[in-house]
Amino acid sequence: AQSVTQPDIHITVSEGASLELRCNYSYGATPYLFWYVQSPGQGLQLLLKYFSGDTLVQGIKGFEAEFKRSQSSFNLRKPSVHWSDAAEYFCAVGGLNQGGKLIFGQGTELSVKP
Amino acid sequence: ETGVTQSPTHLIKTRGQQVTLRCSSQSGHNTVSWYQQALGQGPQFIFQYYREEENGRGNFPPRFSGLQFPNYSSELNVNALELDDSALYLCASSSGQGLNQPQHFGDGTRLSIL
Image 1 (tube, rainbow over the protein chains, first blue to last red):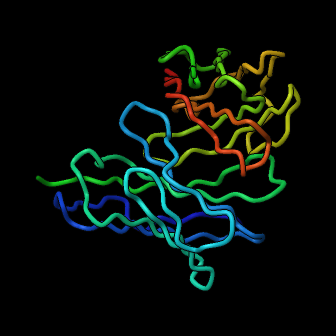
Image 2: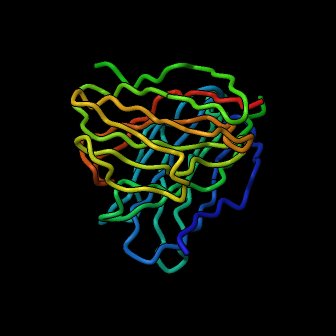
């Protein structure tokens, strides 16, 4: 079955601290992987995506993610968190010839302490 | 560049009624995808329209239907509303049907069923 698991429902970090949000996927074909961020009352904004090639991908707002095929993981990282990063983060997986279908995880809510 | 716009922002309906949600795609985009996001959950793919044809469908019953118009705007119609249909409905547009074309999301329509 195709699925995405985000094991952490809620994470709190201090401003300036590093961040890692976990994502594990189950997908039968070559996966396309995405991270989106959602602020309250708003839609989703794409942070970064992985299709192929270099397994470390850089995104907007200083985020990066690393694809590890052996672990079926695509964890999101940021070296120094800002208060404005507080939001809900979603990992998603899709594939070629899947009609644009994205499978999302349940999300991780990030809180930032001053 | 105008982004993805959805209307209305909020909507309250009662069980058994029908509803139509609207989405204007971003300029230059010919593909629209619809997602349902229940409270505390990640978005679930409903269907995608590419050049006015349904291009893929998720696990939703036939009472969820859609249209795409020649200007690539789209409608989501839901008949015989049920309490479980209460959710945020997100529209995303892209410049092609594959996931290599990033999906740009609107801010959604919040539908409440009483």
